[in-house]
Amino acid sequence: MATSLFMHQYLQRGELSGIYGKVMEGKRLSFDDGLALWKSDDLTAIGALANIVRENKNGNDTFYVRNQHINYTNLCNKGCKFCSFYAQKDGPSAYTMSMEQVRQKLERTRHLPVTEIHMVAGINKKLPYSYYLELLDTVKATRPEAHIKAFTMVELLHIQTLANKPMTEMLLELKAHGLCSLPGGGAEILTDRVHDAIFPRKETAAEWLETAKTAHRAGLHTNATMLYGHIETLEERVIHTMKLREAQDETGGFLTFIPLAFSSKGTKLSHIPSTTGYLDLKAIAIGRLMLDNFPHIKAFWMMITPPVAQTAQWYGADDIDGTIVEYTITHEIDDDNEGQNLSQRQLVQMIVEAGRDPVERDPLYNVIERDDSRAVLEDPRRLALPMLA
Ligand code: V47
Image 1 (cartoon, helix red, strand yellow):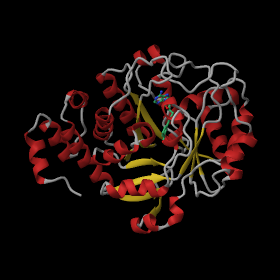
Image 2: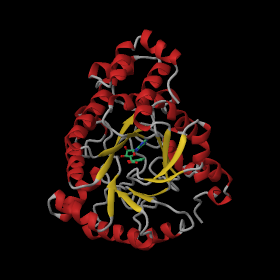
Image 3: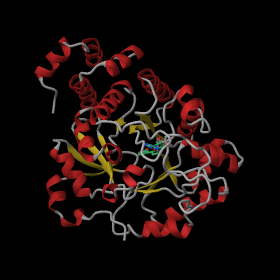
Image 4: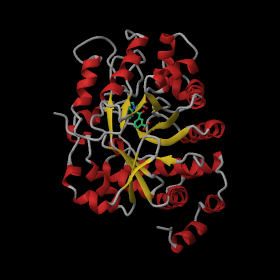
Protein backbone atom coordinates (compact mmCIF):
# COMPACT_ATOMS: atom_id res chain seq x y z
CA MET A 1 0.00 0.00 0.00
CA ALA A 2 1.86 3.07 -1.20
CA THR A 3 2.13 6.30 0.78
CA SER A 4 -0.53 8.72 -0.48
CA LEU A 5 0.20 11.77 -2.61
CA PHE A 6 -1.23 13.90 0.15
CA MET A 7 1.31 12.50 2.62
CA HIS A 8 4.18 13.06 0.18
CA GLN A 9 3.13 16.71 -0.11
CA TYR A 10 2.88 17.01 3.67
CA LEU A 11 6.40 15.57 4.10
CA GLN A 12 7.81 17.79 1.37
CA ARG A 13 6.54 20.94 3.08
CA GLY A 14 7.05 20.03 6.74
CA GLU A 15 9.92 20.48 9.19
CA LEU A 16 11.44 17.14 8.15
CA SER A 17 11.56 18.01 4.43
CA GLY A 18 15.36 17.62 4.30
CA ILE A 19 15.08 14.09 5.66
CA TYR A 20 12.20 13.38 3.27
CA GLY A 21 14.50 14.35 0.37
CA LYS A 22 17.20 11.95 1.59
CA VAL A 23 14.70 9.12 2.11
CA MET A 24 13.32 9.55 -1.41
CA GLU A 25 16.85 9.50 -2.85
CA GLY A 26 17.87 6.51 -0.72
CA LYS A 27 20.60 8.56 0.99
CA ARG A 28 21.95 7.70 4.42
CA LEU A 29 20.77 9.83 7.35
CA SER A 30 23.36 11.65 9.48
CA PHE A 31 23.71 12.03 13.25
CA ASP A 32 22.01 15.44 12.99
CA ASP A 33 19.13 13.90 11.03
CA GLY A 34 18.71 11.27 13.75
CA LEU A 35 18.67 13.94 16.43
CA ALA A 36 16.18 16.07 14.45
CA LEU A 37 13.87 13.04 14.24
CA TRP A 38 14.07 12.44 17.98
CA LYS A 39 13.46 16.15 18.68
CA SER A 40 10.47 16.33 16.35
CA ASP A 41 6.99 15.79 17.80
CA ASP A 42 5.51 15.02 14.39
CA LEU A 43 5.01 11.29 14.85
CA THR A 44 2.78 11.12 11.78
CA ALA A 45 5.57 12.46 9.58
CA ILE A 46 8.24 10.27 11.22
CA GLY A 47 6.03 7.20 10.80
CA ALA A 48 5.25 8.03 7.18
CA LEU A 49 8.97 8.45 6.40
CA ALA A 50 9.73 5.10 8.04
CA ASN A 51 6.86 3.51 6.16
CA ILE A 52 8.38 4.55 2.83
CA VAL A 53 11.63 2.74 3.74
CA ARG A 54 9.71 -0.23 5.15
CA GLU A 55 7.65 -0.72 2.02
CA ASN A 56 10.72 -0.30 -0.23
CA LYS A 57 12.46 -3.08 1.68
CA ASN A 58 9.65 -5.46 2.61
CA GLY A 59 6.61 -4.46 0.59
CA ASN A 60 3.38 -5.27 2.37
CA ASP A 61 4.75 -8.30 4.26
CA THR A 62 4.67 -8.62 8.03
CA PHE A 63 6.73 -11.53 9.37
CA TYR A 64 5.99 -13.67 12.41
CA VAL A 65 7.46 -16.82 13.94
CA ARG A 66 6.22 -19.72 16.05
CA ASN A 67 8.65 -19.57 18.92
CA GLN A 68 9.20 -20.64 22.50
CA HIS A 69 11.42 -18.85 25.02
CA ILE A 70 13.48 -20.66 27.62
CA ASN A 71 15.29 -18.64 30.31
CA TYR A 72 17.42 -21.47 31.70
CA THR A 73 18.71 -19.71 34.85
CA ASN A 74 17.97 -16.46 36.66
CA LEU A 75 21.11 -16.52 38.79
CA CYS A 76 23.32 -13.65 37.66
CA ASN A 77 26.36 -11.82 38.97
CA LYS A 78 25.96 -8.66 36.86
CA GLY A 79 23.49 -6.69 39.04
CA CYS A 80 22.25 -4.46 36.19
CA LYS A 81 20.04 -1.66 37.52
CA PHE A 82 17.49 -2.06 34.72
CA CYS A 83 16.88 -5.76 35.32
CA SER A 84 14.18 -7.40 37.44
CA PHE A 85 14.86 -10.92 36.23
CA TYR A 86 17.99 -11.89 38.11
CA ALA A 87 18.53 -13.48 41.51
CA GLN A 88 21.92 -12.64 42.98
CA LYS A 89 22.31 -15.64 45.24
CA ASP A 90 20.70 -18.99 45.84
CA GLY A 91 17.34 -18.45 47.52
CA PRO A 92 13.69 -19.35 47.05
CA SER A 93 13.39 -17.33 43.84
CA ALA A 94 16.63 -18.55 42.25
CA TYR A 95 16.56 -21.36 39.70
CA THR A 96 18.75 -23.16 37.21
CA MET A 97 17.05 -25.66 34.95
CA SER A 98 18.28 -29.22 34.81
CA MET A 99 18.36 -30.88 31.40
CA GLU A 100 15.26 -32.85 32.43
CA GLN A 101 13.42 -29.59 33.17
CA VAL A 102 14.44 -28.16 29.80
CA ARG A 103 13.24 -31.34 28.10
CA GLN A 104 9.92 -31.16 29.96
CA LYS A 105 9.39 -27.54 28.95
CA LEU A 106 9.87 -28.49 25.33
CA GLU A 107 7.64 -31.55 25.64
CA ARG A 108 4.79 -29.40 26.99
CA THR A 109 4.57 -27.61 23.66
CA ARG A 110 4.93 -30.76 21.57
CA HIS A 111 1.45 -30.12 20.08
CA LEU A 112 2.68 -26.86 18.54
CA PRO A 113 4.91 -26.70 15.48
CA VAL A 114 7.48 -24.41 17.13
CA THR A 115 10.25 -23.44 14.68
CA GLU A 116 12.41 -21.30 16.97
CA ILE A 117 13.68 -21.93 20.49
CA HIS A 118 14.94 -18.66 21.98
CA MET A 119 17.23 -19.15 25.01
CA VAL A 120 18.82 -16.42 27.09
CA ALA A 121 19.56 -16.26 30.81
CA GLY A 122 21.64 -14.80 33.61
CA ILE A 123 25.34 -15.35 34.20
CA ASN A 124 25.46 -18.19 36.73
CA LYS A 125 29.10 -18.66 37.67
CA LYS A 126 28.52 -22.19 38.95
CA LEU A 127 27.69 -23.63 35.54
CA PRO A 128 30.52 -25.37 33.67
CA TYR A 129 31.10 -25.14 29.91
CA SER A 130 29.61 -28.62 29.53
CA TYR A 131 26.23 -27.26 30.76
CA TYR A 132 25.91 -25.02 27.70
CA LEU A 133 26.83 -27.83 25.30
CA GLU A 134 24.36 -30.18 27.01
CA LEU A 135 21.69 -27.49 26.87
CA LEU A 136 22.05 -27.24 23.10
CA ASP A 137 22.21 -31.06 22.78
CA THR A 138 19.02 -31.42 24.85
CA VAL A 139 17.05 -28.92 22.76
CA LYS A 140 18.34 -30.44 19.53
CA ALA A 141 17.42 -33.97 20.65
CA THR A 142 13.95 -32.97 21.89
CA ARG A 143 12.93 -30.60 19.08
CA PRO A 144 15.25 -31.49 16.16
CA GLU A 145 13.11 -29.52 13.71
CA ALA A 146 13.49 -26.22 15.61
CA HIS A 147 16.16 -23.61 15.04
CA ILE A 148 18.08 -22.68 18.22
CA LYS A 149 18.58 -18.94 18.74
CA ALA A 150 20.52 -18.58 21.95
CA PHE A 151 22.98 -16.62 24.09
CA THR A 152 23.46 -12.86 24.09
CA MET A 153 26.95 -11.41 23.64
CA VAL A 154 27.20 -11.20 27.45
CA GLU A 155 26.56 -14.91 27.80
CA LEU A 156 28.97 -15.67 24.96
CA LEU A 157 31.78 -13.72 26.61
CA HIS A 158 31.14 -15.58 29.86
CA ILE A 159 30.93 -18.99 28.17
CA GLN A 160 34.22 -18.23 26.46
CA THR A 161 35.98 -17.82 29.80
CA LEU A 162 34.72 -21.31 30.69
CA ALA A 163 35.63 -22.82 27.34
CA ASN A 164 39.06 -21.21 27.57
CA LYS A 165 39.48 -21.07 23.81
CA PRO A 166 39.31 -18.39 21.12
CA MET A 167 35.80 -17.00 20.49
CA THR A 168 35.60 -18.25 16.91
CA GLU A 169 36.66 -21.77 17.90
CA MET A 170 34.07 -21.82 20.66
CA LEU A 171 31.34 -20.49 18.37
CA LEU A 172 32.04 -23.27 15.88
CA GLU A 173 31.77 -25.79 18.71
CA LEU A 174 28.42 -24.31 19.84
CA LYS A 175 27.31 -24.43 16.21
CA ALA A 176 28.24 -28.09 15.99
CA HIS A 177 25.99 -28.66 19.03
CA GLY A 178 23.01 -27.01 17.32
CA LEU A 179 23.33 -23.24 17.78
CA CYS A 180 21.90 -21.59 14.64
CA SER A 181 21.81 -17.86 15.40
CA LEU A 182 22.03 -15.34 18.24
CA PRO A 183 19.43 -13.00 19.72
CA GLY A 184 20.00 -9.26 20.00
CA GLY A 185 20.00 -8.78 23.76
CA GLY A 186 22.60 -7.18 25.99
CA ALA A 187 23.29 -4.19 23.75
CA GLU A 188 21.21 -1.90 26.00
CA ILE A 189 22.64 1.54 25.02
CA LEU A 190 26.05 1.33 23.39
CA THR A 191 27.78 4.20 25.18
CA ASP A 192 30.27 4.16 28.06
CA ARG A 193 28.25 6.68 30.10
CA VAL A 194 25.10 4.55 30.22
CA HIS A 195 27.20 1.41 30.67
CA ASP A 196 29.02 2.82 33.70
CA ALA A 197 25.79 4.18 35.21
CA ILE A 198 23.44 1.21 34.99
CA PHE A 199 25.25 -1.96 33.90
CA PRO A 200 28.93 -1.47 34.84
CA ARG A 201 29.64 -5.18 35.39
CA LYS A 202 28.46 -6.19 31.95
CA GLU A 203 30.44 -6.00 28.72
CA THR A 204 31.23 -2.56 27.24
CA ALA A 205 29.82 -1.22 23.98
CA ALA A 206 33.08 -2.02 22.21
CA GLU A 207 33.03 -5.60 23.53
CA TRP A 208 29.39 -6.13 22.54
CA LEU A 209 30.03 -4.90 18.99
CA GLU A 210 33.26 -6.88 18.61
CA THR A 211 31.60 -10.10 19.81
CA ALA A 212 28.66 -9.62 17.43
CA LYS A 213 31.03 -9.06 14.50
CA THR A 214 33.05 -12.16 15.47
CA ALA A 215 29.83 -14.20 15.49
CA HIS A 216 28.92 -12.87 12.04
CA ARG A 217 32.35 -13.80 10.70
CA ALA A 218 31.90 -17.30 12.14
CA GLY A 219 28.76 -17.63 10.02
CA LEU A 220 26.15 -16.87 12.69
CA HIS A 221 23.51 -14.22 12.16
CA THR A 222 22.53 -12.10 15.15
CA ASN A 223 19.92 -9.50 16.03
CA ALA A 224 20.48 -6.18 17.76
CA THR A 225 18.35 -4.56 20.46
CA MET A 226 18.20 -1.08 22.00
CA LEU A 227 16.84 -0.71 25.53
CA TYR A 228 15.19 2.72 25.61
CA GLY A 229 13.16 4.78 28.05
CA HIS A 230 15.50 4.86 31.08
CA ILE A 231 18.43 7.30 31.58
CA GLU A 232 19.65 7.55 28.00
CA THR A 233 19.71 10.89 26.16
CA LEU A 234 18.37 11.48 22.65
CA GLU A 235 21.97 11.81 21.44
CA GLU A 236 22.81 8.42 22.93
CA ARG A 237 19.91 6.79 21.09
CA VAL A 238 21.31 8.16 17.83
CA ILE A 239 24.87 7.06 18.69
CA HIS A 240 23.53 3.57 19.46
CA THR A 241 21.96 3.18 16.02
CA MET A 242 24.98 4.66 14.27
CA LYS A 243 27.33 2.18 15.96
CA LEU A 244 25.08 -0.68 14.86
CA ARG A 245 24.95 0.68 11.31
CA GLU A 246 28.74 0.90 11.17
CA ALA A 247 29.12 -2.69 12.40
CA GLN A 248 26.55 -3.86 9.86
CA ASP A 249 28.52 -2.14 7.07
CA GLU A 250 31.48 -4.29 8.07
CA THR A 251 29.82 -7.70 8.36
CA GLY A 252 26.23 -7.64 7.12
CA GLY A 253 25.41 -10.17 9.85
CA PHE A 254 22.53 -8.43 11.65
CA LEU A 255 19.06 -9.58 10.68
CA THR A 256 16.69 -7.44 12.70
CA PHE A 257 16.71 -4.45 15.02
CA ILE A 258 14.47 -4.67 18.08
CA PRO A 259 13.85 -1.58 20.19
CA LEU A 260 13.08 -2.88 23.71
CA ALA A 261 10.82 -0.67 25.83
CA PHE A 262 12.21 -0.37 29.36
CA SER A 263 9.87 -1.76 31.99
CA SER A 264 10.92 -0.46 35.42
CA LYS A 265 8.74 -2.61 37.67
CA GLY A 266 10.84 -4.52 40.20
CA THR A 267 14.12 -2.90 39.09
CA LYS A 268 16.48 -0.48 40.85
CA LEU A 269 15.09 2.17 38.48
CA SER A 270 11.47 1.66 39.52
CA HIS A 271 10.93 5.45 39.79
CA ILE A 272 11.10 5.71 35.98
CA PRO A 273 7.64 5.56 34.38
CA SER A 274 6.82 3.06 31.65
CA THR A 275 7.29 4.02 28.03
CA THR A 276 4.25 5.23 26.09
CA GLY A 277 2.81 4.10 22.77
CA TYR A 278 4.04 7.40 21.33
CA LEU A 279 7.65 6.71 22.34
CA ASP A 280 7.44 3.05 21.29
CA LEU A 281 6.28 3.96 17.77
CA LYS A 282 8.91 6.69 17.52
CA ALA A 283 11.71 4.27 18.52
CA ILE A 284 10.62 1.81 15.85
CA ALA A 285 10.26 4.46 13.14
CA ILE A 286 13.60 6.14 13.84
CA GLY A 287 15.26 2.73 14.03
CA ARG A 288 13.92 1.99 10.53
CA LEU A 289 15.15 5.34 9.21
CA MET A 290 18.66 5.24 10.73
CA LEU A 291 19.39 1.55 10.10
CA ASP A 292 19.24 1.61 6.31
CA ASN A 293 21.38 -1.54 6.13
CA PHE A 294 19.22 -3.68 8.45
CA PRO A 295 16.78 -5.87 6.52
CA HIS A 296 14.15 -6.01 9.29
CA ILE A 297 12.70 -4.06 12.22
CA LYS A 298 10.79 -5.97 14.88
CA ALA A 299 7.92 -4.64 17.00
CA PHE A 300 8.24 -6.98 20.00
CA TRP A 301 4.58 -7.19 21.04
CA MET A 302 5.42 -8.69 24.42
CA MET A 303 7.01 -5.43 25.58
CA ILE A 304 4.95 -2.79 23.76
CA THR A 305 1.57 -4.63 23.79
CA PRO A 306 -0.15 -6.27 20.80
CA PRO A 307 -2.11 -3.13 19.77
CA VAL A 308 1.03 -0.98 19.59
CA ALA A 309 2.97 -3.73 17.77
CA GLN A 310 0.11 -3.98 15.28
CA THR A 311 0.09 -0.21 14.69
CA ALA A 312 3.90 -0.28 14.38
CA GLN A 313 3.47 -2.17 11.11
CA TRP A 314 2.73 1.29 9.65
CA TYR A 315 5.62 2.99 11.47
CA GLY A 316 8.57 1.09 10.04
CA ALA A 317 8.21 -2.40 11.53
CA ASP A 318 7.85 -5.44 9.27
CA ASP A 319 8.01 -8.09 12.02
CA ILE A 320 5.86 -8.72 15.10
CA ASP A 321 7.86 -11.58 16.72
CA GLY A 322 5.81 -14.65 17.59
CA THR A 323 3.88 -16.96 19.83
CA ILE A 324 6.57 -16.69 22.57
CA VAL A 325 4.94 -19.12 25.14
CA GLU A 326 6.76 -17.86 28.20
CA TYR A 327 8.74 -14.69 28.79
CA THR A 328 10.21 -14.17 32.25
CA ILE A 329 12.67 -11.33 31.69
CA THR A 330 10.37 -8.57 32.99
CA HIS A 331 7.98 -8.47 35.97
CA GLU A 332 5.34 -6.47 34.21
CA ILE A 333 4.60 -9.59 32.22
CA ASP A 334 5.27 -12.27 34.85
CA ASP A 335 2.53 -10.85 37.00
CA ASP A 336 0.03 -11.02 34.19
CA ASN A 337 -0.01 -14.57 32.90
CA GLU A 338 -2.46 -13.72 30.19
CA GLY A 339 0.17 -11.66 28.42
CA GLN A 340 2.52 -14.56 27.80
CA ASN A 341 1.49 -15.95 24.45
CA LEU A 342 -0.50 -15.46 21.31
CA SER A 343 -1.82 -18.15 18.98
CA GLN A 344 -0.86 -18.23 15.32
CA ARG A 345 -4.42 -17.21 14.55
CA GLN A 346 -4.25 -14.16 16.80
CA LEU A 347 -1.01 -13.04 15.20
CA VAL A 348 -2.39 -13.49 11.70
CA GLN A 349 -5.60 -11.72 12.66
CA MET A 350 -3.68 -8.68 13.94
CA ILE A 351 -1.57 -8.54 10.78
CA VAL A 352 -4.53 -8.94 8.42
CA GLU A 353 -6.57 -6.36 10.28
CA ALA A 354 -3.67 -3.92 9.89
CA GLY A 355 -3.82 -4.40 6.13
CA ARG A 356 -0.52 -6.25 5.89
CA ASP A 357 0.24 -9.69 4.42
CA PRO A 358 1.17 -12.28 7.09
CA VAL A 359 4.28 -14.31 6.35
CA GLU A 360 5.37 -17.10 8.67
CA ARG A 361 9.16 -17.11 8.79
CA ASP A 362 11.92 -19.12 10.39
CA PRO A 363 14.50 -17.27 12.53
CA LEU A 364 16.63 -16.55 9.44
CA TYR A 365 13.65 -15.04 7.61
CA ASN A 366 13.24 -17.98 5.26
CA VAL A 367 9.55 -18.08 4.38
CA ILE A 368 7.76 -21.08 5.91
CA GLU A 369 4.33 -20.14 4.70
CA ARG A 370 2.98 -17.14 2.91
CA ASP A 371 -0.29 -17.45 4.72
CA ASP A 372 -3.52 -17.72 2.93
CA SER A 373 -5.07 -15.58 5.65
CA ARG A 374 -8.57 -16.90 5.19
CA ALA A 375 -7.42 -20.50 5.55
CA VAL A 376 -5.54 -19.66 8.73
CA LEU A 377 -8.42 -17.73 10.21
CA GLU A 378 -10.88 -20.52 9.43
CA ASP A 379 -8.73 -23.47 10.53
CA PRO A 380 -9.67 -24.38 14.14
CA ARG A 381 -6.28 -26.06 14.72
CA ARG A 382 -4.58 -22.68 14.36
CA LEU A 383 -6.56 -21.43 17.34
CA ALA A 384 -4.38 -23.44 19.70
CA LEU A 385 -2.79 -21.19 22.25
CA PRO A 386 0.67 -22.25 23.31
CA MET A 387 -0.60 -22.76 26.89
CA LEU A 388 1.59 -24.71 29.25
CA ALA A 389 0.02 -27.76 30.82
O1 V47 B 1 19.36 -7.94 27.10
C1 V47 B 1 16.21 -6.62 30.63
C2 V47 B 1 16.25 -6.56 28.10
C3 V47 B 1 17.00 -8.33 26.91
C4 V47 B 1 14.52 -5.33 30.99
O2 V47 B 1 16.69 -11.18 19.30
C5 V47 B 1 14.65 -5.49 29.61
O3 V47 B 1 14.67 -11.55 18.60
C6 V47 B 1 12.85 -4.13 29.24
O4 V47 B 1 17.38 -9.98 24.03
N1 V47 B 1 12.69 -3.92 30.56
C7 V47 B 1 16.78 -9.80 26.67
N2 V47 B 1 13.82 -4.92 28.74
C8 V47 B 1 15.68 -10.01 25.63
C9 V47 B 1 16.20 -10.03 24.24
C10 V47 B 1 15.27 -10.19 23.11
C11 V47 B 1 13.90 -10.01 23.26
C12 V47 B 1 13.08 -10.20 22.17
C13 V47 B 1 13.57 -10.57 20.95
C14 V47 B 1 14.93 -10.74 20.80
C15 V47 B 1 15.47 -11.18 19.48
C16 V47 B 1 15.79 -10.54 21.87
O5 V47 B 1 15.90 -7.84 27.65
C17 V47 B 1 18.16 -7.90 27.74
C18 V47 B 1 17.76 -6.49 28.09
O6 V47 B 1 18.14 -5.60 27.10
N3 V47 B 1 15.72 -6.29 29.42
N4 V47 B 1 15.48 -6.05 31.59
C19 V47 B 1 13.48 -4.50 31.46
N5 V47 B 1 13.33 -4.28 32.77
